[in-house]
Amino acid sequence: MPQAATEVLSNSPEFTVSELSNALKRTVEDTYGHVRVRGEISGFRGPHSSGHCYFALKDENAKIEAVIWKGVHGRMRFKPQEGLEVIATGKLTTYPGSSKYQIVIEAIEPAGVGALMALMEERKKKLAAEGLFDEARKQLLPWLPEVIGVVTSPTGAVIRDILHRLEDRFPRRVLVWPVRVQGEGSAEQIAAAIQGFNALPEGGKIPRPDLLIVARGGGSLEDLWSFNEEIVVRAAAESMIPLISAVGHETDVTLIDFVADKRAPTPTAAAEMAVPVRAELAVEISTLARRMFGSWRRSHEHRRNELRSAARALPSVSELLAIPRQRFDRSAERLPRALRANTHQHDRRLTMLRGRFTVGTLKTRIGQYSERVTRLGTLANRNAKLLIEKRRVRLEHLEQLLDAFSYKSVLDRGFALVRDDKGAPLHAAASIKDGAALRIEFADGTVSATAGTERIKAAPRPKRKRAPDDRQGDLF
Image (cartoon, rainbow, N blue to C red; front, side, top):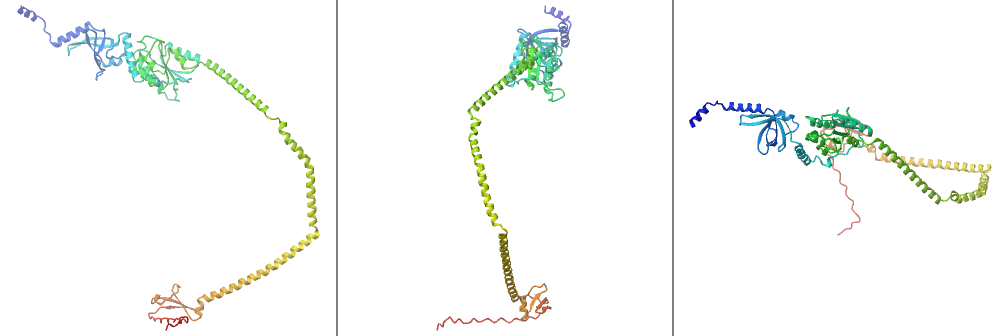
């Protein structure tokens, strides 16, 4: 038997490892060209440094390796996450290097609404932990915005409903940023629109909106999924312009609703939140005007009643003028008598003054004043002559003193005054150097001289003897 088995095997074709691996690869790829596989993502740690993603799909009994190439991963609407149940579409192949088969995924989507809800809840918890849903971050909506920016599809019924509702309530200027609201690339467009409105400069050519509305009509969870993407939620959270989310119907909930400053159940409701009703404002203004006028009229009437009450408490004009009127009448009665008395008094005084200033009296007084002036003039002349004589005598006395104290009188007695060449007087012979130029002044003139070498010693002055004091007695 062993020998027969050996002979049978020897008739089988012989393959190399590479040939067998390639044959298996072709068989698998030809038989399972494109497949859809449902399973849970396992071992996903994010994209590799090369940009490719490597992980596994598993269920209760089996596991299959999976790979997503870099270019495919960048275009995917849903990104793989650890533990997410998905439906992967791709091509089944083998990897000869490790004798394994794997699926090269071309598209991936969550496996049903339950998986999307789980992913949404997980993302919601993550963003809430970062504080993006805090009420303190939310801004108040402007009461009457001048410009409203709308981020939505330009072809749907949503933009028509918003414009129609604004026209009915309070027409405002509307800027529409057209975007895709579902499908590949829609989340990036929505986020870019929100950021673009915020980047508009104030006072620029395109006005910066005072309010943003992000709107979309109703749809399934998959259709509304773009508004659950992190890029959209973070863009709405970073918006400095107050934002209203109006995505889906009233029962639809997306993550942008939690981060928006205000959530509207429908796009039409968002337009109602954005502006008040002009007619209602007119009615309210009219009501306030009537109330203000009524309040003013009541206040005016109240002040009038107070004034009347105060007027009744005041005395009448006749009462206020009674005493001044009596004083005036009494003064009027006394005025003629006082005027006559005053006139008589001034007449008497004038008569007395007129008697004083007659022609004879004036001549007498003028003569008296003339004699007095003559007498004062004579006295002034005599006093002036006495003062002049007194000043002349004093001046002569001072002249005599000046002559007595002058050195010229000494020169008249035979003395001379010796000066140096600069005119300074010399007081001692020791201060004169030999050959020095001298000027000798005599009583009748001045001569020049030169100091000689011969010095004559001056005789010492004899000391004056003190006269005996006759008052000193003799002790002996």
